[in-house]
Length: 80
Image (cartoon, rainbow, N blue to C red):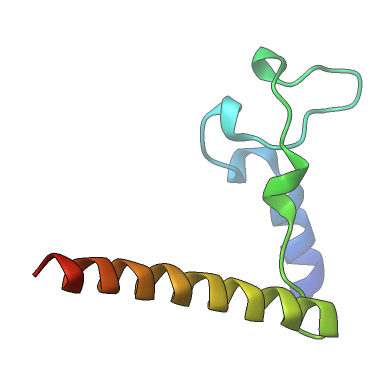
């Protein structure tokens, strides 16, 4: 048996998966997820740095964090 076939079989074996049932993100077809909860799509978003829009988002986040830190430091210095 080659490595790919062994990995596929191990991946598909249900007993290899650990963790509580509530943590399983994808329900089986025709079944509702436990407690009726579904995974929020927002949690799956990432910043794609291979695109210019992703770089712009990252730069905007960096500027926003920098401004927050600078404002906090200026407020701390003003109180002294």
